[in-house]
Length: 293
Image (cartoon, rainbow, N blue to C red; front, top):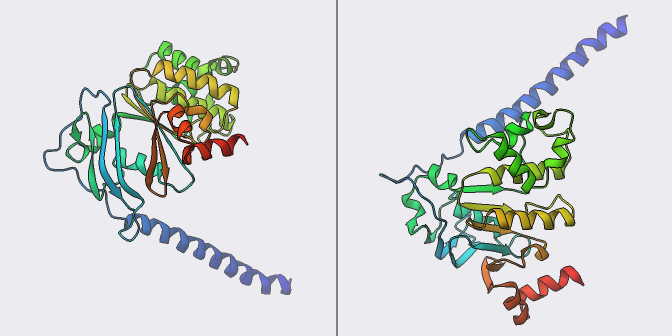
């Protein structure tokens, strides 16, 4: 009893110190977020992007996350309405950075980006970002029914529209086999479905949007090759009138692209169709060959 009376307060003090250390670490992170600079306000009299057609132009753009290191150097790109633009290259080449600039998560250091002949700095960020639908490698599912998760980006979406999107994404048959179908409730972290099925749900969500431009960042990385080919065909048919930007590591999935940007160390080293780039036997050819040797 004396031993317990002696060691008890010591254990309590140790536990309290541990809690205090955890709280200090959490508080440090919270204040670090609070002290982050806010996003720069929209330009004075910035206009809404309306009646989007999907014409995108990047002119002489250079950008770096810090002043000391430039990641994108003198980038030029013209995407017509309905074009499929693929962005390929090794890890760290600047592929995702291009997407960040298109959606104006960062402002370019030099040059300009235009949507339908409007420089994006003259547009409101909200209207610019609503013009895009995104499917990222990291899927996002919230606590709610499957119907609610697919219909999230489109107000007043009907069940018929949700089912059509699910069929196009090749997830409808799986949903119908669930006991509650589209009324099945998902966990907030989506732990009650597989990673591949979560990705198909997010693809269906993007298909349902009215956005005229689509960004896919390695969006089919968690599905098998056969399903991936089916999704690529479905998306190409369903989004024939949308401008698509695809970041791909598996080069076999972007052979039908209207234009392929080959990025290496911040530079677009090659640009063209798959067949033209293969004939050049340059950097793209070596990337492609390395995946099939």
